[in-house]
Length: 149
Image 1: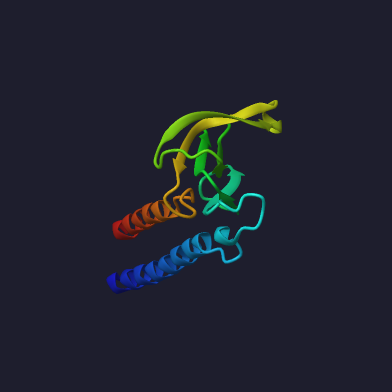
Image 2: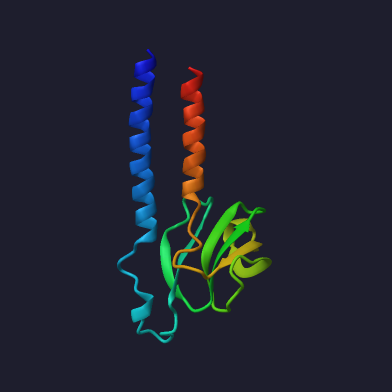
């Protein structure tokens, strides 16, 4: 019985590693966006940021935009929303501030999207989701359950 658990654990670890690698690679590498070769009105935009608005960090990595300032992740706890994007003005990398946007939430009686904004500008996609941390936590919980059996 012990050998069967180790085999199950090994198969789970391989599938888990493959899934984590592929999802991270898909989020990081986007060959269709090259900010250095930008020919629009602002060719100085060299930072690539995720853009989206969703209900959680994991499901909020959809689009991308070239940015001249800083990438941000805004967490609106009142409305249960995570938003990611670019601010044209540069913010200090790793800084946090309260921010009331001018984005009206039609399902919330036109209340404004607001919350804590986390800024970064040290690398492309620096405002991506924390899927690695969530994946590690999931792995540890699963290992604990398998070990308890």
